[in-house]
Image (cartoon, rainbow over all chains, first blue to last red; front, side, top):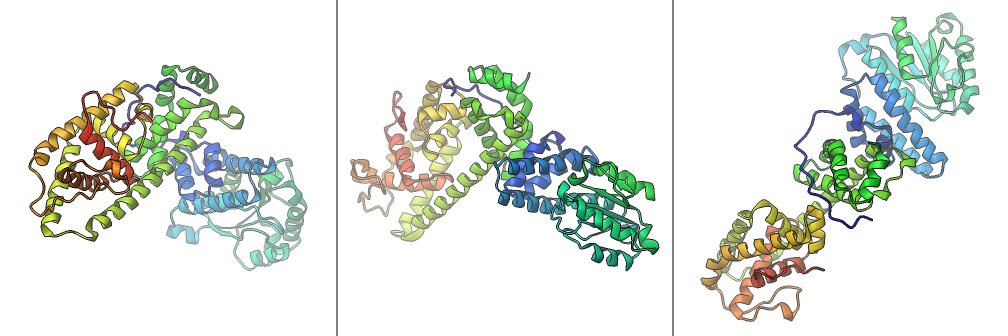
Length: 228
Length: 252
């Protein structure tokens, strides 16, 4: 405890332009854990004023969510807080979504999905926005998509790219089965570019049937750009 | 300078260290507070509160859990939410005071007279220098002790006392003419005392008691942040009793 008087500090001279240094992962994690999606969106947008979306999502959002996961694993935050953070992130991302443009409706189509049992979809939401920024039309199927259903969905559409993500390594097997199902579908579906990513593939470099194992959103963006 | 070294210096009472910290983080903390409060005044308060918290107890920061900047931003956000909460509470009390004020006017004369004097008090308070008005608000509206006012303002205790005392003397001088003119034409002269303060707070004279009672209500209205009528009553008592050596508000 400090008992001596604090010196008089000057007033802050008004509002400043966006400052990416505010967007520290620890701060974002605390906002998400408090369910403050408005503030979280603002913090992310501070960084977006200085860096690309892929960079911000890789360097700020992903570490923030990893921190949330760590705090949960260490027992500092409950599972409820972890869920609240996930929901808050989804809401925050929706606030900073790239603007809808007519071009997005006619751009190449990317289908995004998490395999069966997989509930972590924040990475897919981030990827969706990064692809939209690049002019892709994105159909994000979200969590827990059965492999057969995914194949049927893709086969019924004019799809240019498939992306799948897993949050933990224990979903690798279901991811593998989903990739196999797509490759076994035959026809144009079997030939589709297919990238996999997420924290769950961090330890692997290749996955049979996958065109690319991505270890970052920037990596995924680069792969998608290579297709056009 | 490393965060931990800076905080160690602050813990040792190094005033330059807190200034370095201020220079490093204050603009971004202000931006964070603005996002929460949407008010420049509340944001400045929140930033000040955050630095005061760091100054008082820098050991609250745990370097093992992250770096200093994000912690300062988080602290600022909480202080900003506190500021919004205080403001909302004050508005509620003001609304309640408004209701009380208009609930049962004695008669039209009384009501008009009250309005005129309320305006006079508000004018007198507005004319005070900013530092005195702030010190007065902290002491009588937020209910801080002199020591707390000094800490909040970052000034020596003696300066805090002087600011409060001078403000009260100035207010009294401004109101002197009004008070010496006696009570309103419709004033029956009956003392109502000061609500919620007990007999010891009643004015010694009937007319003066009435004026005090009215001033309490005015003080409640003025202080868009007044939390309790008690602080208002203290304010009026101090206003009447202020002497060059008095210490209004008490050094609780």
